[in-house]
Image (cartoon, rainbow, N blue to C red; front, side, top):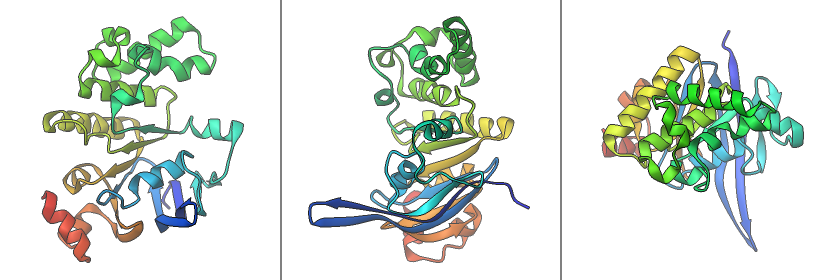
Length: 252
């Protein structure tokens, strides 16, 4: 019996502007098992990030449901939503933009801990351990976002996401703004976290080569609809749809 930690059923998102409407996600379903990584791939505008935002309540769900460990979280608010953020955290594409430039990386990483009522001294100690866990020296706690490289800032962003001990990490194009060498280093960090700590991942990505290296299952989107859903080997070695074949040819 599989241990499903996250499940989406028939998700739909329609954006309305005046008399015009645009369907960004159309009847998408998937399951994420504990300790697995699901890659959601597709070109720009395919609906990948919109799905991530619906799961984390950055966008409302037009139709469908989202379940976390069997509980419907589609429309939760207030305290129930805050509790979800203890279990699901997100790492964004542009790490420097995700930190307040007026605050040190240590302040940014420790914010959620302070909000939980943890003392400043204990928060400082935990922040240093989180930085080391993500391959950064403790001194990075005192640096500002503009004083570090993109890769270092993304490591700090991952440390911040891990601060509340989530069970699911959603990485929304978390390596695409980095150069190839740094991409590889961040991917190795994510693989280590997955193997050692049984974290579950949702990897929003357009790079099938990256997905093949990291993911257990792949969902291919095109214009908001599911094109293919299966293991990386099934989809990359035996693609059924022309769109998937074009995606593969563009990166492999």
